[in-house]
Image (cartoon, rainbow, N blue to C red):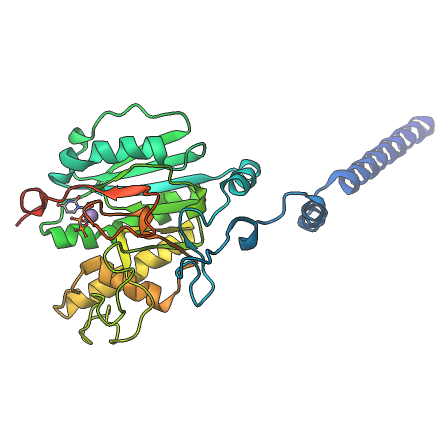
Amino acid sequence: MILGKQKERMKYRRKTSQLLLLLLFLWALYRQYHVSTKKLQKIYRCWSMNSPSKELKLSDWFSPSQSMNLTTTNWSAPVVWHGTFNEEVLEQYYAKHKITVGLTVFAVGRYIDHYLRKFILSADMFFMVGHKVIIYVLIDDFSRMPWIQLSPLRTIKVFEIKREKRWQDVSMMRMKTISEHVVDHIQREVDFLFCMDVDQVFVRKYGVETLGESVAQLHAYWYKADLIKVPYERSELSEAYIPTGMGDFYYHAAVFGGTPTQVLNIARECLKGIMNDKKNSIEAVWHDESHLNKYFFLHKPAKLLSPEYCWDFTRTDIINIRNIKLSWAKKDYKHLRVKL
Ligand code: UDP
Ligand code: MN
């Protein structure tokens, strides 16, 4: 009897010490291999300090021109013209830092058949060549989406939107749709995002030199004009109001961009202005463009694009316009815009 009990006690002790040993072993394993947030941060710091691919400085790729006066703003943002950037340095950098660039484009009513195919085909050929691109098409009739065979690295995502009754609202309400889509999915899918009008065509390489935190496009009609003359909204009753003599440049709403976070800020603020104006029964003179100009007056863009990045070929004053990358398509407002 006693012998049996002793045996059982021994067995129990052996089991307990085995369990303790196992626990000790597991604890040692945990200490050795557990990757805590702190440890991860330490590893990352070491890696990033040793990493040869440092952040790109403006002076690494951009050289302001001596012969042209508009290559840097008074808040030190670069104005990208053909010849001011070193494409090789940029491409080397982005070969190590892979990116995906988004491009939103709206086509509503007759703009679908008239402009959409050419815009997408030209983007496929010239927009961010060699980099991953997602084209977001916002269209009011799925069945009229053109079938387009894209090159490698390019994806199209098509979303149906409701058609606004007035063309002014088609244009302005893009800010609402853009902000909703950035929040819903775009922010997780791309590193940079451009928002463009559909009535234009890429005619040459439109590359990574255009990427930035927030990007504004100089308007082909107004980039040389006296600031007093540019068509900012001048009614104090509108949220887009800019007092005479104030402002920096007149920007074109056919192109704007930045990181998804910045594009979200732009779209949300412009929409806020547009909706407040609606509440007060006011419409800014150039609709979303007036609000975009107000936004960039208050929040200076990190990068400006020369008019070569959105040029109207019918213009004759082409001094300094040497390498057009995106060109206005022919306008035919009377027949194409949605009407009431
Ligand atoms: N838009 C559209 N259908 C319309 C009116 C406008 O799809 O009937 C979209 C389209 O993307 C267009 C943008 O809204 O490029 C801005 O309108 P528009 O190009 O006519 O303005 P503008 O270039 O004259 O400022
Ligand atoms: Mn347009």
